[in-house]
Image (tube, rainbow, N blue to C red; front, side, top):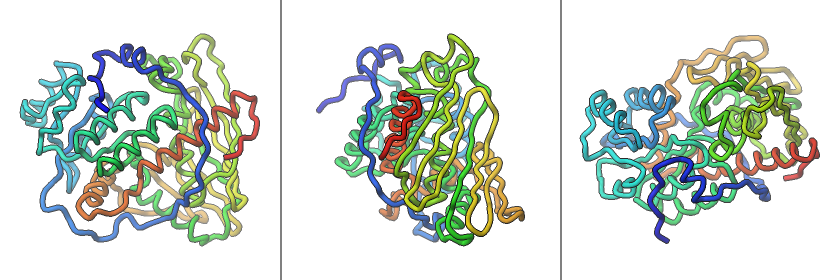
Amino acid sequence: MKYPNFPNTRRAFIKNTGIGIGISAIGTSAYPYTNLFQKEVQPNKKLGVALVGLGYYATHKIAPGLVASEYCTLKGIVTGTPSKEKEWIAKYSLPKKNIYNYDNFDKIAENDEIDIVYIVLPNAMHADFVIRAAKAGKHVICEKPFDISVKKAAAAVDACKKEGRLLQIGYRCQYDPYHQELMRVGQSKELGSIKVIRSGHSFFGVRGSNWRYTDKALAGGGPLMDVGVYCIQGARYATGEEPLAVSATAYNTYPNLMDGMEETILFSMEFPSGAVANIASSYAARANFIDVSAEKGSYGLGPAYGYDGAQGYIQGDKMSFQAKNQQAAQMDAFALNIQNNTPVKASGEDGLQDMRIIEALYKSASQNGTRVKL
């Protein structure tokens, strides 16, 4: 199948694709803890990365992460804004031949300097560019959430498998040593079985003008599709389990804002071991933590999900780990996966599972908090 050129505007994209959200059955794959920092064969050269979309995160977090990376380097950009081309060429000494726009993106297949395409576009555009990048013969990192529907995310996973390309979702926290410790303590049952998880990730953005707060077709939903994904991830890898059922209630306290999306969502996740996660995510609050209560004690992270790393405690004692640049760590891990032909930790399947959970949560919220089995 030949994929059409990407429309010049986001509105044109929405009109041409007819975005929607559906509910799909959820798988029950395990989520085991693994040591992400084990010694592997190092690449004999840095792998070239092209950033697709040059918004805040790409500009202020990923690009500096590439500068700090051991195994990756910025080699190209894809943007629809000519003024940004000049800025990035000057700042990162990029050759003109490695600059693309959304219409000629597919020509990246001819560029041997680019090994990885990192997609940092609005949510509804993710899967389409994952597919185009895989068809161009490039490995792919896709920012979270994977997309806005299970159907589109699954198609992107299938495309990468068909083309023999590796796919990683930008779950940077999985590569942070504090989150690694959260995984280890919970999955090893060092303090016994987990009973209750409380987590929240919120900030005050409801009055913002960004597409996340104003354009449901691009965002797919409110804070659940943005910062709430981190909390879903945290509960999954803290337990090492997949939820059996979820329930959710959504709220809006600012009239005529959020384009029909939730402003705040409160939800619970039930796990096979009996553990329960109670989570809140909002664009009208402030929170950034995960607390885990087990049979023999408690531990957690706070701040947990921020760009600048986490802090944590276990049984009242402070965790102490060397800080890592999360963006560099996730890209370096991906480069090692490519070099060593090893499984990707934050894989496309991982992101697909989160989309299944998200769709189930929205289904529950639309039914006044009805418990939805997965």
